[in-house]
Length: 201
Image 1: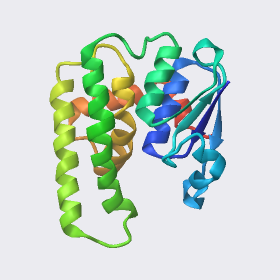
Image 2: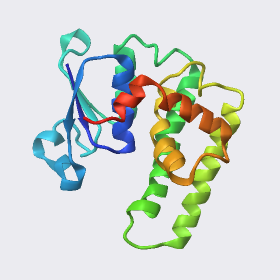
Image 3: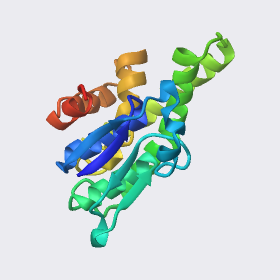
């Protein structure tokens, strides 16, 4: 059974969504980042950068124990372990997967920082990241106008962006201005595995 070290962040939900979609056996190990549990010496052995999510798989390749941090690495590992359906051999999957993990999520997190978590009101930063998020949603909307999902069928390319679209788009600035993103978001939100991933733990 895989141990998923989890907290309710966008990246945490990426990993939980992926493991739910694969059907692999797992259990959630909460790491309360509000209480700084990510700095526990035992957790640092699993996630040297003191970030969640992280996983421990006692039955990795060749029967060896695997520990992984970084949500992108976790998504790829889980998809491959489950047979690869969520990570098909298509360069477009990597393009949108890396865009989600390396471009969209970090910028969306800055939007969340200044609009939700920062203790001071910084109007120039808020205006900047509001414009950035809207631009990125426009990138997605144009692509999704001709594609049901980001790259062929539903894959880790979609999982890598869905949590931030859900948190900062659907439940933040709204998605009415980006109807193709809304259609994509709502289809993913309705998936049973996604509903389980975003449920109680």
